[in-house]
Length: 243
Length: 307
Image (cartoon, rainbow over the protein chains, first blue to last red):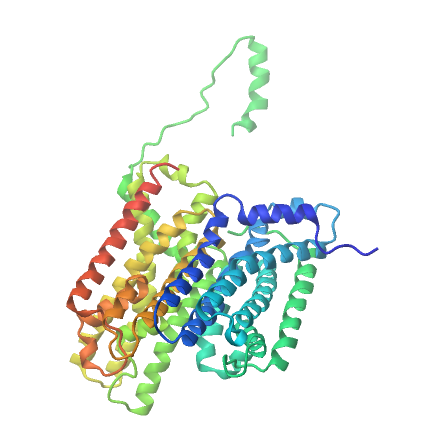
């Protein structure tokens, strides 16, 4: 029997846990910031192409998307593991992989809503439809956002220090080490997203460090691998009470 | 609590037919009372140790110790380079070292400020503290002092490694001592300003993961936004002075540029040291730091007025 990968009730509860109370407003800071910066840039008279790339690729894709991926990716499952309420979900007659896919779907859609939509709007505001830049960056953001969500969800299942490890990956590996060591850029979700965006946009409008032929398989392997590993890990989860 | 003594008492009471109060030897505490100051000091020491995972499980030591190593090891490598290459100056100035590797101290803050505050909120131990003689002010003072002290250890230790290395390499004593002073000023300002921001965010959420992401998000995104605003404002890169006001948004840039200006590092070096927009800018940057610290402390006190 083929089951749908998304289970309605679990999805609903996850959305409520993620966006309920004031948390949704806090998450909305990221897209608001992106749109605000875009509006400020659009009214200035600098080099629009450079500004668009700086704001949407460096600030958006480079900083806000990983942070959003971190908060949402770990928020859908790590907080429940942290406060122990995950046992009530695990006790239900649901296959563990369905829990993972449901939570991942919610995370990915949330990230898309909070990062891809403002990227598209900001891109159109600043650069219009020229060179397909806005659409390309939006696609890159979506791809990278999905990969971040899967990776950080896996981290949330594996480690209790998921947020700190994720931060170390996003800031130290992708930014600090990636600036000095070229090889590090091959293993960077941000660069994979940029590679996808570059392939969509007109020639010469964007630069990416990784070839599309490398980026797409790596993206698929990372995302699928994270889902499988998270399912396996969740199947044998031990709850520890250490801090 | 008194469960073990009950089975023995019940038959006695039943036999005599009336309620009897037995003297089972409880005595009041006769020893010295160590008082509020002692309790506050204990809270400080325990917070400082906890920030490095001392006195906690091995797994919670890993992260702070790794970050401490990440701060100190590059300094040791730089010293080794200076000695081996027989250089006549340090490859990097003391305040610049903190600016370059400041990311690690920010991650340390983001990881450990919620450990100090969020766990108490989460496990509802704050009311227990306040049922003792210490007041809310004492609690906030002890926790803030512990966080600042921990940040000072993380930022000052690599500077001392650089300094001792420079002296061992036979570099100019006077120059290095003065610049170590600049570095120490930078370390103090980083510790105090960043801790103020971090603690305020950590105190507002009982969720550790959320606190970590919120602190780091604020510090990193504010830096990124300041960079973008500066890029939007300044057309040609030479006339950057008025665009430097953009760095008022970002706490770490605020400290870096203030120290560069006050210590006169901008003129003495041709490299790209960030500056404040003129003397007025330095005054404003300094005032903003005072406002951030005082404001955050006042808000923290207000946060704990009602729990």
